[in-house]
Amino acid sequence: MANGILVVVTPSRGALSPSSYELLGAGKVLADALKQPLLAAVIGGNAAALAGDIAARGASKVLVVEHPSLKDFTEESYARAAAAAAAKADASRVILPSTIAGRALAARLAVLLKAGLATDVTEILADGKVRRGYYGGNLIAEVEFKSPVAVLTVAAMTFPRAEPAGAAAPVEAVSFDPGASVSEFVSFQGEESREIDLGAAEKVVAGGAGLGSADGFKPLFDLAHALGAAVGASRRAVDSGWIPYKHQVGLTGRTVRPKLYVAVGISGQIQHLAGMAASGTIVAINSDKDCPLMQMASIAVVGEYSELLPLITAEIKARKGHAVPA
Image 1 (cartoon, one colour):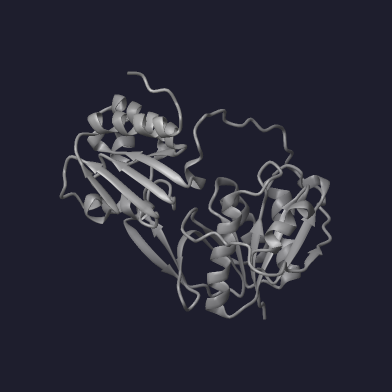
Image 2: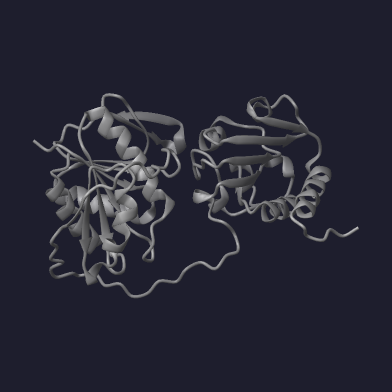
């Protein structure tokens, strides 16, 4: 009978992403729940060079699947590599990230392993069952696996990142034959942006319906740049067309877990709170002192954002040594 929790780490452009450490955090919760060992597999063209970082974060063993065919991500090759690692680990559960690539990989892997599949998992229960949202988060389902092996993808920023802890786990190479492939990697074109990635940000400044228009986000972006923060938004702001969907925080957007979350003009609907409630320090700026987000905030500031944000931004720049216009 399969006995092991396997976290599959797939580096992005040859480097580890913060989500890799979140996977290990989720894996630890599931391993404790099922009383099974936690293993990790690093897959890629330079996987061996990255295995040491993963080995220091709580797994009992790290498997390395390295091959020239894995230099660039293709679903077909990576699914075969992950299947080889799962077989080596004798895994009962395989965990991947709920990214576009992670979900695509999970579907193929579930077929190869004849496994059950649950995507976008947000909670792992003490008995090993998991919870995930449906219909934009309006329904939360509890999932129980009947198959001996199951594949899960976990939603970003819903589990704590595993920190370096104690001695490094042993690292073992896994032999891998990519075989013939019907798909081919052609090119990668990254998005050029000055903005900090919302999913990995330690500081977030988010705006809501209270900003009134797309122009209302201009002082919010200024504050975010001064703080070195990512920019987030409520669903109402996104639905109004004031800011692109990639900034949306909540059940139907991104889940964030920053050390600092500044909410400007956001009342605090349940679907938004679900995406940022795990933040460290929450600062709410709103003209409505009684709205839900003001009530849960670490610091609540009552006032008009159009007056407050320029003053706060100027003060931050002054303390950082930037010149502030008179």
